[in-house]
Image (cartoon, rainbow, N blue to C red):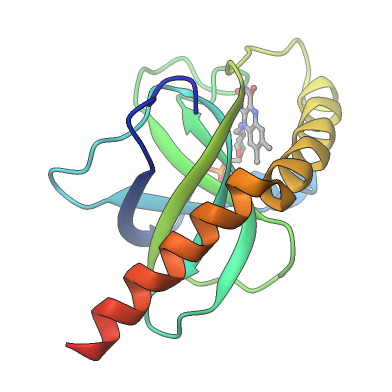
Length: 152
Ligand SMILES: Cc1cc2nc3c(=O)[nH]c(=O)nc-3n(C[C@H](O)[C@H](O)[C@H](O)COP(=O)(O)O)c2cc1C
C-alpha cells in the first residue's frame, strides 16, 4: 500500500452495530471498533482480507475508513468492511483486517446513488487486488499469523 511502504498493515477489533444504512445501499458493512493502540490507516477506501478470529474463516473485503461524509457532518472516523462473499452478520465477533492496497480517497458524494456506483467499482477493483500476487502474499501472512495464535 502506498501509505505503508514498510510492510503489511493489519488491525484487530470487535464488530459492533453501525447506523444500519449499509444494507439499504446494497453494501452491508461490519463496523469494527479497533482495539486500543491500533494504528488505523488514514481515511480512504482499501482492499483487504477479513479474518474472523474465533473460527479462522477468511472473507474478501473492501474497507471504508472515514467519517461517511456523504451522510454525516461529524469527524468521527468509522472502520467498516463490506465482505464480498458472505451475507453473514458477525456482531460481537472479533476480526482481523489485513490491508492489501489503498483504492481511493473517501468522497462526499452528491447522492447515495453516486456512492453506490463508486462502491460497485471499488469492489471490482478490490477483487483484482486480492487476487494479485501481493493480495495472495498478505493472505498467506494472515493465515500464518492466525495459525501461530491458535497453536499457543
Ligand atoms: C466500498 C465502500 C465505499 C465507500 N465509500 C464511501 C465514500 O467515498 N464516501 C462516504 O461518505 N462513505 C463511503 N462509504 C461508507 C458508507 O457511507 C457507509 O458504509 C454507509 O453509510 C453505511 O454505514 P453504517 O454501516 O454505519 O450503516 C463506503 C462504504 C463502502 C463499503
